[in-house]
Length: 232
Image (tube, rainbow, N blue to C red; front, side):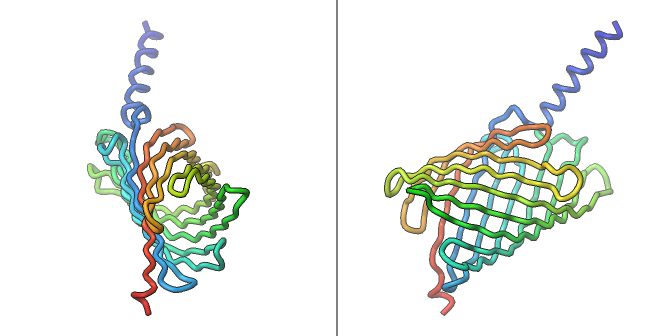
């Protein structure tokens, strides 16, 4: 009887944890990216993302990011920037868990581009300084911490026609404190060049953490108008 009780309890706990993290749900990320040229060597990066545990419902995360880019040449870009991230990590609003994480993030990154035959490769190296606050609205107490992280993304774009392309990337996140591995993102998408400065992508992301995995559909808009005339 005792063994049976332990087994049943284990099943209940496992089931509850599964419901809490939403791992078995197909979520969605809705994203906008912009690179706006303001001078021959300078541009502004803008970005907004809404992330959901399910298809456009059950809010998970809001991410807003901006940065100043310096174009060393056509194939090398250095960036310094800031991001604000608001996260609800609880699937279906579990009141017993930390249910609000706000983060102010400073980042530095370097992008290198190269071409092999018709394949376009992009290497992105990023460092992040993360100022994180964890809250539970049922408690007056909160936890603040500072964490540092490194990221590397290898992206490959495959042109199919003048307007149609495929995009693939793998990105590794490394913590610079505690356990090194943070997460890995594997992505595949089909894209469409609508105009010279507007494109859209629809794809699939496999987001692997140390203990859980998430499957996400992504829809992204890239809009890169040249703003140099406004800054003359």
